Image (cartoon, rainbow, N blue to C red):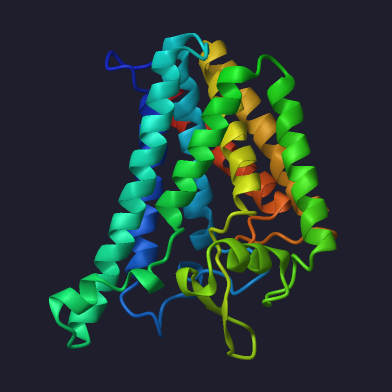
Length: 301
């Protein structure tokens, strides 16, 4: 028997929590495959263009963040009040600083393991990586939430489209699909952050270069990524019947994924540059999985 799904008494949506749990379990598994040299191919990130199951973990989490942001901001009626703005700014700063702190702690541990004194290991600020996964989450959430608070109705769809199209033009005109230091993403990050504060990646011929996969320019499509999750959050909340929810999640998820796979011939699916097609494919797949979980948990339990 079909039930009318509502958030739990705690204000949380069970199927969304299940999706979050699956994503976190996937993160733990791909970060600890047992042996990096002998890890199964699905547990490795693709080297450049393409997609593996491992590459779905981070974008799925960002999709979930977008859905959760809709539910969180609904408490403020999507009005840019002082309380709403302060909540967004506080969370953004806190998540960003936690990312910096974890990066510093990892650098400290590596220094101590290399035989450095605590003082030496703790003060390598000149090589501290500024950006990273949590920093990407913080910036994407912060900008997406501020846009959602100041934009009404279908304006969000246009903003998503504009962000992805403008970013595609930047990539196309700035060698954005090449793994090299001439890539516009690397150029901008080196100019603003400095090479010593960036992630060091390897080119196909084994040369290490300063290339930040969570860079400043690639934050643009990640904002669109969270906004798409935000729009799907609205779809889930505004459609109270489970069958309708599942139908729309599967349809729109399929549309996005199909668009991404179709457009990859002119814009490759690439996680390290967070290409527009990567956004479309991964948000589409995440929406489909969310629809499947609602069908399993809320309709057929």
